[in-house]
Length: 394
Image (cartoon, rainbow, N blue to C red; front, side, top):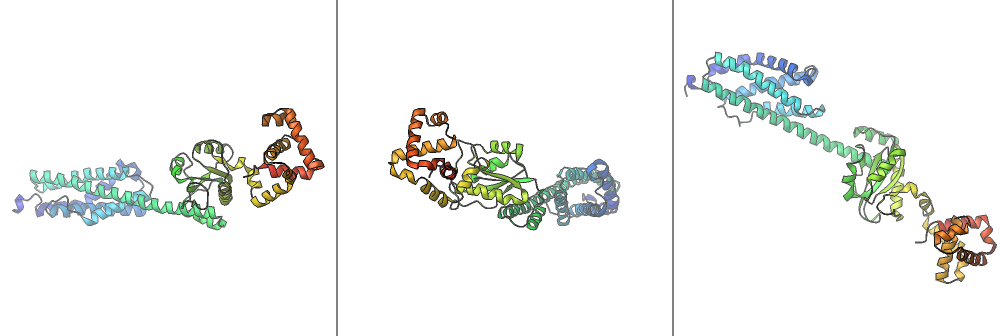
């Protein structure tokens, strides 16, 4: 093709090259005016980065134009620069909206200046049409590269932060020293709450529950093995500020999720909340219906079952007088004695709880006094019987 017939003859390219500094300057000035979020971005390192990116992008376009006008041919440096801009936007916490707007402004300004220079240099109508096609195809390439950089940066920083959050959960559950906890929280960019409450629940329910909780809620990195805890495999959540009035909404969110809830503790003592919830599961404590197991409502059982063998020995010793009666009679007498202790000897209340006549209570207590003698009036014996019978035998 003769020079005069080429859409991009050398003399036109020369004219466009001479315009590049002015086009770059005008492009940046217009972006500052039309994309407000970049008004302060053209100072310092960010400004120099953007200026270089504009110049590289314009130079890349001319390389594309003089290389035969193939808009699908990648222009390495320009696309790399656009990719880096996208990553920078993500690191700055911005969406792609401003950068894509800047690309649109840049395309319009560049086209206006460069098309004018091309016409003045004698570019044909056919060449001008091809020129427009290349400009906007090129901008699409740059935009796509920036979008990819933005997405990749979010993905990589998201993965890194998830790892830091998982590490933070691990050191909290392990009860590590304060300096370790503080360092882990800083690495995870996690703002410590007043308190943390441990929740153990099956992994299958965790995702649904998380969507309703404080965004600072931490998740243990590893599932708790079923071999250590009865029931299905569980994960641990550490829920911020679920004390006082905040506990009710947490318990409501856990309805039907087979969850065990520890006590609220200062965030640096979260291990204590986790340990209590874990202990409740190990002891086989159960909630009623679909409600979560709230360890704050089961403190007496947790205390009494802390040493199962000691409780069993106590029960055997203090109930020894009942060894002289048969199994059926023993069961009824133990049931009556427990109710009598809990209701401080109020016969009508004992009868109502056991669904028997008050005279039946009177008769059974007569049997118990025959078996125990004066020991039922001894404060220490009453204390030991109360402790021994507070938790039903398993």
